[in-house]
Length: 96
Length: 96
Image (cartoon, rainbow over all chains, first blue to last red; front, side, top):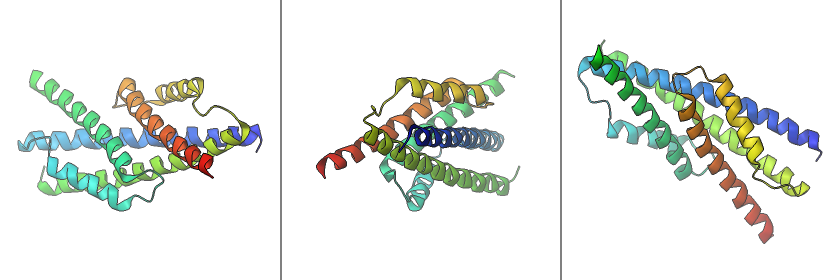
């Protein structure tokens, strides 16, 4: 294995990082939209049943190498950040 | 806005979750490969300069809605989990 191969793998990793970035932000835009719909319908933003379903869905589709527990931990962090984004939106809406 | 629209948005979110799952596992496979190359070359697995560069790269390409700080926090969690995966591999290699 040469240094070039390491550079090549790192280039691939950079591309995956940008794909992940795009998907995480795409997810955030969807969550904001969902938050807006829920706000209009007077539905609570945090839905633990829905969160559980999403975590189960991830478990069903995990082919590794990450263990499901690790992935669910990472997704919970993403869910939490997304919920905070919805809360910011709601605070702004209340100020209007 | 009807309930159907909420369902439609949730279907889109499920798809993004699966895309994210795929990218995170793809990233893990690359990191494992990089770890193997580094092990063969006797290079330290954790490289704080490289990690800093990846975080800067993410900051440069962030178009929101997540703030860069939030994204970097999420990516650090992904980096940490990936490093743990490399360490598991290394422990197994040492046992061979």
